[in-house]
Image 1: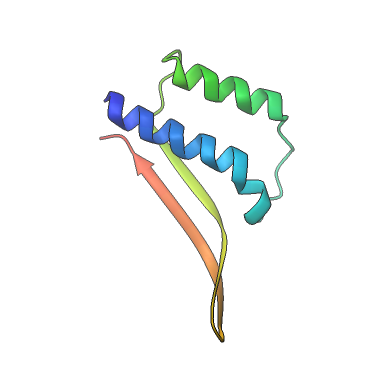
Image 2: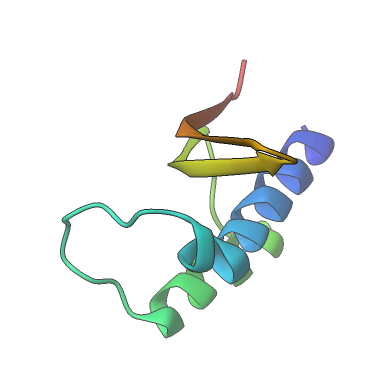
Length: 79
């Protein structure tokens, strides 16, 4: 259980730091950075229970003359 929580927190933290630079943001009300950091800290300290996480965005890969783009969705579910 600790390993799952650690992986989810790590993925969420990475997404919070680098996601806005590469991901397309959904049309939902904006959430403040301080609120997201507080939620992340609470998860790292074990003060909150995470049951699942879904990360979505757009990706682009350029390799030589190949230029491909698409959408990505990553789901982590606690069993």
